Image (cartoon, rainbow, N blue to C red; front, top):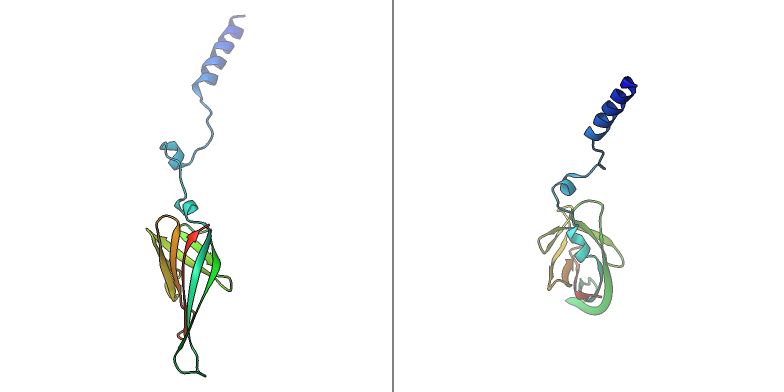
Length: 137
């Protein structure tokens, strides 16, 4: 009987000395939740697009404008966004409110302003360029 009481006491001490908790990430253990700042930026933007094209047949620059939607989504890499321009998807690195081409050899970029507006430049070649200025839907 004394051995049984002794074993119960030892079992109680051992079982209460270990505390089981779920594994937490470093940011959760510090009391901070990790928030992806790109969530406020992603979405559909209605933009006025202005195009400039240099035509070899006619002298001068041909200018045109149109209203289109561009879609901004998150990339798997941190601080990288994908911008769907309709005919092409480009990647940009978000630094503060500036959109830089990613990788750095692209001919495009822009910036965000007023928390829901975008100004984006895209120059796929030396003879054509487009500018997209618009607001989030």
